[in-house]
Image (tube, rainbow, N blue to C red; front, side, top):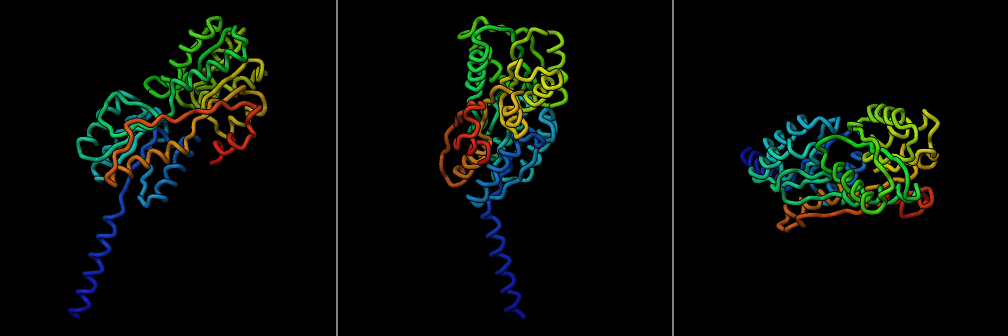
Length: 310
C-alpha cells in the first residue's frame, strides 16, 4: 500500500513537471470575425504545433471593441501565461494594458498594428506605409496620373490602417499631383457600414474615377456598392488584403488590384519571437513583412497562389 502510494505520488510529480514544461502563449488579435484574422490564426497555430507551445487564441468579435481586448489582456496577465502577443485595436487605449503585462514580467510582442508605448519586446507587422504607397502607385497607374478619387478608410485610432492611409496620401502628393482626393469616409471595420459609406461617396461624387480602401471590410463593402450601381470596373478600386470574396471581385472586375499582406507568416513569426525569448534568445525588436500587389495578370501565378492559400 505504501509502495503504491509512493508510486502514485511520483507519477503525479512527473506529470506536474511535464505540464510546467509546456509553455502557454496567449495571442490576442484585434478581432476574430474577419478572414484576415482567420489566416493569422492558422499561422499562429502552426507555429504553436511546430514549437510545442500551447496557444490561447482569444480576441473580440469586432475590431472596434478595444474595451473587450483590454479585458482579455488583463485576464491573461492574471493567469500568468508565459507570453502574450497582441494586435492593438486602438493605439492609445491599449498602451496601459500592454505596459501592465510587461511590468508583470511577461514577454510581449505587438503585431499587425502599432501602439503608443515602447513597453514591448518585439513588433511584427507589414510595412503599412509602403502598403499605402503601393496602393497609390497602382491607382495612379490605372488613372494615367489624373482623376478624382476617394479614400474609404478603416477606423480612427487603428495604427496599421492609419499608416496605410498616410502612406497613400503622401505618395499621391509626391508622384501623382493630378490625382485628387475629393472624399474620405470610415467603414469602421464593418462591411455593411463600409458599403453605406461608399454609397454616400458615390452619390456625392458622380465623376469619381477611383477609390482606395485601406482594409478588408472597406474593400468588400466598396465592391458591393460599385456592383449595386453598375460601376464595377468603371470606378477603379484598389483595396488592401485578399479574402476569397475580394479575390473573386478581382476576377470579375469589381476590384482592380489588391495590396495583400501575408497574415499566415505574420502569425507564425509573432509566436516565433516569443518562443525564442522563452528559450533564452533575443528576438529582433522589429520585423517588417513585405506586401504583394495582386492583379488579374499575376493572380494565378504559383507565388500569389501560395500567398493566398498557405
